[in-house]
Image (cartoon, rainbow, N blue to C red; front, side, top):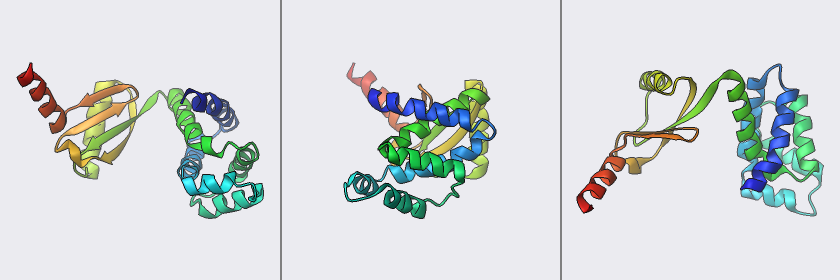
Length: 176
């Protein structure tokens, strides 16, 4: 894992410096490239000695839904030429961290047993921003095994108010 981060970091930093004018626009296509590059079939195709760089680029460009400007196309071609396609998801993670550090914000993932509607999510985000003391980019991931409540992860901080966590605490208390 450390090797992955070590290789991805220079790419993320170079992309961040090159896109200083509009880092949010880069996040759109970089996240899309990361989703596509995480597909095992694509990586297998890209690693095939019979597949040319142009063929790999063509497949990716055909699958990506976000519009790839010249900056994105050059970045993608460079990654393919250097056999770094597998590192795109980690590049996206590190790039997002650089953008967040610049803006003084963080990503927050709210794990919930049930879908959260827009109004409840906005209210939850407001409460979490006050608790963590910074602007948060909140996303929701459904985890039915939580039974109820939420589990919030902001960086390396975790706030777990789920029913599952409470049951685990009760189990520990009763068996102690």
